Image (cartoon, rainbow, N blue to C red; front, side, top):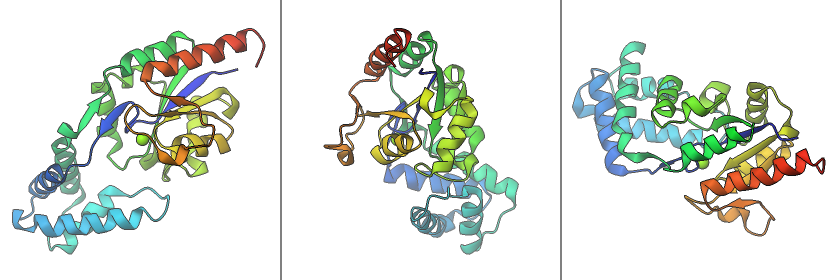
Length: 241
Ligand SMILES: [Mg+2]
């Protein structure tokens, strides 16, 4: 019996696009807010980029405050934790124009809740958790979510099995009672399926080619997810599954 739905965030509930101009603006804002010399922005940016690339090799989530602290120190602008925090907050704000909640996201989550199902947001992010959650609130997602599971708090990223275990723990349910929805085949379909969950690939922002020919359930529009869930819930009530 289905009890809950776990949604990926980036390119599922909301769109986020990398933008070189915003990246440079963000690093400049970070350096200024951390109290460092603006002339060091390029060096700090290079140090951060190197740490992003290194982090992609494994599934341990990047410790962003530690990465920023190290990049500042390497550029000759060591800063205390409070200044690092101010820098990260300024950078996060600079990226605001790149984040767009999908217009159908509130109706999608309301539709899920109307079926009596709980909602989890299950996201890979190294953004500061407080700022990420405040962003969810602004996007109309926070108030509609029963649980928010972030890789920066779990310590590992999807598709690490520990991430999915954290989602089930937060929802207080067994894997068989959860459907995972997201745009990444590896993170939101294959990983959850291996953990025993149902899964659905969201293709309204991007079409993950890795899913081709694998018999994956696909949703082309956010509200299509609600239709699929209605079918599952009705079958469950009829005792078919
Ligand atoms: Mg995603």
